[in-house]
Image (cartoon, rainbow, N blue to C red; front, side, top):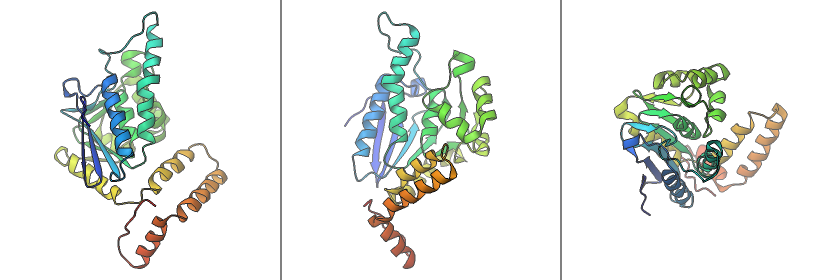
Length: 265
């Protein structure tokens, strides 16, 4: 399948999805979002694909919504048009990324601003080039609140004080500082970014496909569960995964001192 606003490559179980509107720092138009969601659906349904890497073409990762190319409905207020666009495009994208049935890796190759921060944080592992940065422009520049999931993720990963500071002041957070804060997995030299991200994705692709989505759900539930509720969830999840062929393979491989060969069954 051909795409107009993204590039999609699949090699040895890893899908590389590159946002491809470099002339506008990969800002999110409705057409680009449609391409991304179509690609996510395609890789999700392909049993040969077991990990995804998301990055941006050119000198930026993603600068959020394309404010110059927004859609509008006759008779609707600006706020109604914004909400409709979120309902039809941005929110489904955030949902699709978080719920993808495979591990996801972001390779942040430049500025991640606005909704671009939300896209990066929706992935499981974020690698950022040393020259990259993260900036929430919603409140100080636009007078709106962070969206595309950034209000959900940010406070969880950096704490309330830093989330408020980033959101209210809109200061650019360098990749090294983001790593120190625990906002991202790792800051790497620019020329090593794609090698590091692809290497991690390859390792993930060789891992247990059934366990990754369950891990994501278990960690998300821990944000609101009591300890007893979380212990019950761990038990119930282990019951399901413990009946899988992958668990038997993992135990067998451990006892035989060899790498496991997970099949997703």
